[in-house]
Length: 325
Ligand code: F6R
Image (tube, rainbow, N blue to C red; front, side, top):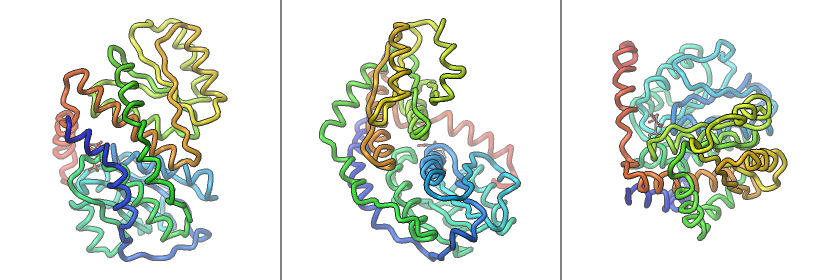
């Protein structure tokens, strides 16, 4: 556990190095001439696509898609930019979708630390960033997020400032906040309630609890929460869940949800992850929740590193998808 905890604790130096990475074989794409941007990737790599897509939705007048499967949506054609992300470079869903992107002559760019995605990218000479090896994919979030932003800053002149990114990962109180969150989460199924503007952080939180703490977990997003999940709380057993409301600075809907759930007597914690800008908030929130999920594994006496069920699933997919294996 110590090793993984240390890897998370060292995120600021991982990120600092990652921000100095090169974009290999860069090209310049005129945003006006692109049909859209699709992010392809699974799990700890796929969530990077969620994070960047949410930013682009608000900043760039282009359709944006996230693909977490073997196939691309029909509308992704040669006019689209496809950003494929796989830390290992060997995830079959990602490789299958990339094969399809190549077949459709989409503009491909990639992020990996090796594997077949790296081999293919070299062979095709597509724009790419190589990220540092030696991490578990989920612990390499800073590297992959930096790579995605460097790529887009270069390819479509996105102009995201990364100046303050490292700073938020140096917060001296983060470990204490994480310890507090981990002890709160012991003894119930974690439920994250999050506002739509930072929904990818909710997805990331769920994945971290799944993979590090070996627990099932649910994530609900506001305002949709108010149209279905809100009713579920009318009679869900109180001792079953531990609810964390992720607040992004000013409260609004998040505070409403917290107050409502508190009135119903649920065990609840509000975690304010707001750090000013979108990417800084996502980085800080992912850091604190990642640390908490590793600490929670310790409190539950499970190994935070091993993900044998993912390996079991991947073996099945290999036989299921012989063509790509
Ligand atoms: C493991 C993890 C997984 C992987 C996923 C896809 O740490 O986070 O969710 O990210 O199985 O593998 P990669 O990231 O290698 O494409």
